[in-house]
Length: 331
Image 1 (cartoon, one colour):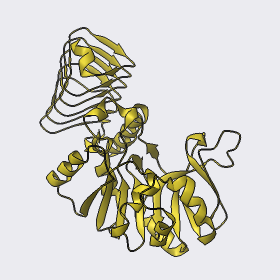
Image 2: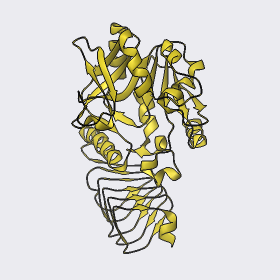
Image 3: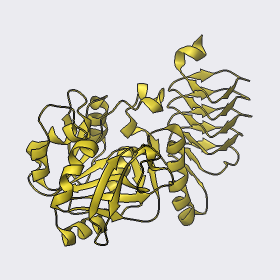
Image 4: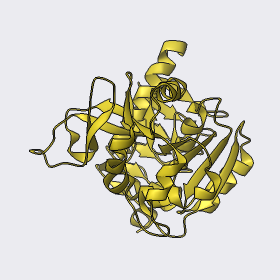
């Protein structure tokens, strides 16, 4: 069985971090986002197809350097084709029931149970289902008593929303769905293809636990918190420290420290610190993401901010709600 992971896109809301690293390779609890997805796939999946474009060479390099249990195939999408066009672009590799998964979702879904659910129902496809309070940013659908989708709408206006059950970004589809997608065109699976599947048996699979769309800094930190909560249950601490990192003093809750970091006595909470970072004494870092190979000198305050790779932030600087880029600091 194959699984297509939609790994394209420029990750604009995660800039400046995505100027140097594609979003699927940004780490959460010291593991790239894309690796969390690959690790969640059921045993039935023996090949993973990454539909990618932006900084595709870095994705290839990562999977060349990190051996996987499943075969990894990375397929170039020459230009953005939307969710439907991206799947159509890898059609030659899809000859049986297959998964399609968004690469920026962290969730507790049991894909093995999901696949079993779909095989029992039959039909032409299925969508994972999650409930939210404000569904306007998502595709919504209604289900009957047999979990069959009866109505689908992508990103409704608040007064049009007929459901708070949203598309959670994990699909199971039959190859004949590909016949509905034109070749070489930008196509939205959610707007243009899914509504056509309803008459042929299109199902929604509900699951419990957690679901985070990691498209923006706040939700990236939320995913970090959610996964560290699970880590806490096993290790009795709500932080994680990577290999060859030295931390002087105690870390606050929900902190991920990457590998090869040096952290002096600082106040750090609810933050992601990537590999190769040096943080000198007396710093306050809160609700922030610090990029690779950053040097932060004494008594710096960074709150609600993103810090780009390889910056040197001088002693005593203070930042609130900033997206720090190298040229801004050097100037």
